[in-house]
Image 1 (cartoon, helix red, strand yellow):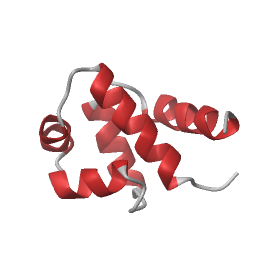
Image 2 (cartoon, rainbow, N blue to C red):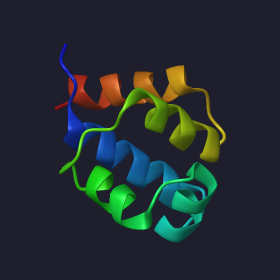
Image 3 (tube, rainbow, N blue to C red):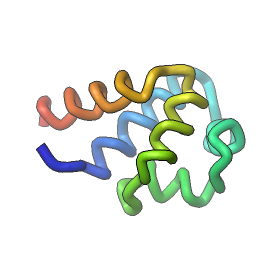
Length: 77
C-alpha cells in the first residue's frame, strides 16, 4: 500500500472537526502553519513522519491509530 495524501487529509480533517477544533487550533497545537495544514487536509502536500506524529499528538491519538484510520479509509475507497 502506498501513501495516499488525500486519505490522510480527509482523516485529519474529519478528526479535527469531530473534536471541535479549527484549523487554527490544530495547527497551533501541532506547531505547524495553518496554511500547511490546509494543504495537508486538501491532499496537496505530503506529510513528513514528524508532522504526522505532531498532528496525532495534537489530536490526542497515537500515530499508529492515525495511520490505521488512513489505511482503513483507503481500503474503503
